[in-house]
Amino acid sequence: MLRLSLRFANDRKCAYTSREELAELINQVNDTELSYHPVSVEDYKKERKKELGEFLRTVIAGIYEGIQNGAIEVKSDFEKAAGRPHKNPLEMITLSI
Image (cartoon, rainbow, N blue to C red; front, side):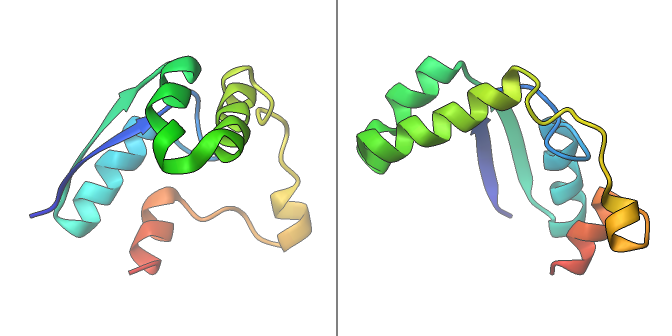
């Protein structure tokens, strides 16, 4: 059984679901034990400096900061553009395996 800890620099929803819900759904489908632990944007930048380098860690941390500040919480035109409603997160995870 795979055991991982997901660490993201915000606690907002990511498109359709919260990070906690996403970990639970992935566990349900894949027989894993993922857990979610939010960290601050500054802590994320400190943790990821070695792996990502200065430029990339700053870009990704900036994306997380925007999400944390509500930048992606906008009305979606997905159904109009796609001609169908969103699939639910569990269905998307199940289809991806």
